[in-house]
Length: 168
Image (cartoon, rainbow, N blue to C red; front, side, top):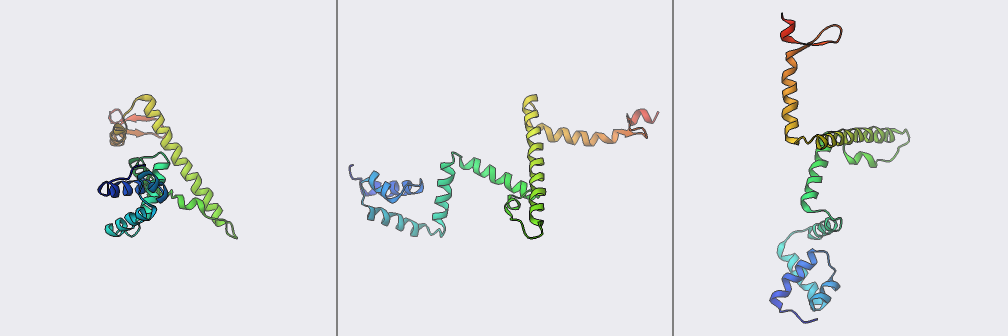
């Protein structure tokens, strides 16, 4: 392995570090001693002044290893936030049973709610895909349906009639 010019070495070491490579791997690939590699990484960490840089690196490496892009990860995070706001928090699924069984009941109830929600969303998605319906149309169609419900009335026999026919 040929030694790299020091002006090229630092960015390569940092990039390799951020990609999750170990100090020994970086040293072997760049031809820079392990001590010099460690010094470059340590100086860089001090220079950027981000206290949890190792956690961020670990997160990025985990996302990369999972085969997921950062955009997909962000989309998943937004979905998790949406589910939390609907009361479908994943945190509820890891509670252990206490002596009276309250937590296991909570677990089962929340698990059912989550599965009902996921089934509902999956059914909508699959049907829209099959019918070639653009998701942006769904909300305007639902609004139109809700707006038009005042045009229909239900009689005592649960028959739905147009309000204009009823007024005649």
